[in-house]
Length: 341
Ligand SMILES: NC(=O)C1=CN([C@@H]2O[C@H](COP(=O)(O)OP(=O)(O)OC[C@H]3O[C@@H](n4cnc5c(N)ncnc54)[C@H](OP(=O)(O)O)[C@@H]3O)[C@@H](O)[C@H]2O)C=CC1
Ligand SMILES: Nc1nc(=O)c2c([nH]1)NC[C@@H]1CN(c3ccc(C(=O)N[C@@H](CCC(=O)O)C(=O)O)cc3)C=[N+]21
Ligand SMILES: [Mg+2]
Image (tube, rainbow, N blue to C red; front, side, top):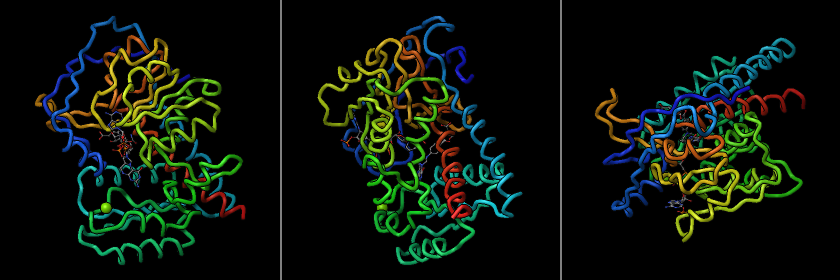
């Protein structure tokens, strides 16, 4: 049983500046919207009331242990282990952090990790060569090129070059296309939306027949989250930056997946009582009381939503750890297809 109630965090949710860490496009957009600020006020509800906290960190740990057991048994029967190649371009601190946790996750699960770190000014040609070499390497079953890439590199060309049988991110247009088609199966489903659905399922939250709203339509989160929920027979509405009545639409939803890249944009009064809220957002917010000088908040206002929702994921400790667990799961799936072939 993974649902557990924990006391709500002490709310001090106002902030002066919020930086979106990963998405270049969101960063550009944020500049255009720099006057927009959402302030999120806590309601002071009783700590035992409200939503169950979906403990993504604990669920991810369980998934990783399951993967470890299966890797060990396949190693015993085949003498082989899954391999994941992670390609990092440039020195973004956030990317370095996540590449490190991906490699650590591999080690713990018995997956062999391969890493190539390339300088910021690497040419697209050189990067494509690295991808081609991993495509040809039989001990590599998954290839991940950490995004975002520097501006001089065409992301699309790089993603297109990854063999669809090793595309553990599921970002190749062919895998995306297969995900969008009924009756067909992609080789891999993108890790973050897959993690969102896995959190719902492992928390006993029914998807079939429910009304879901996905806030955001990016290729890596919102769009595949919509497709995955539809495959599980939810009725899905996608909200984006040009949706005039985002709040009213969201109020109808049994399940809300929030991936808009805007710190604490989704407020308590957007949420239908009892709804499940999966917060994908990762935003750094200045906080002088923290050692690092910042803290992470989601795209939803946790303190306001907790007294209203039926279940909610925290940030950190929600979707983020599941993304990494799903990457390991995808790598194992890719490996299994090669040993059974
Ligand atoms: N936990 C994890 O594992 C991961 C977390 N993330 C986090 O998830 C969030 C989303 O990431 P990503 O999808 O890459 O972000 P993008 O910036 O690529 O996409 C944001 C989406 O949200 C929409 N949006 C922006 N502003 C609004 C608004 N005011 N109202 C409604 N919709 C809006 C945009 O609409 P439009 O299409 O019209 O521009 C766009 O579709 C970020 O916080 C990111 O850090 C991302 C990946 C993994
Ligand atoms: N090719 C590619 N594939 C990706 O899947 C990919 C990517 N590029 N680029 C960046 C985004 C972002 N992403 C996250 C992974 C883990 C956490 C995570 O573990 N977060 C912790 C927080 C850790 C901390 O304290 O910083 C948590 O939410 O608890 C977050 C975000 C994967 N992405
Ligand atoms: Mg680029």
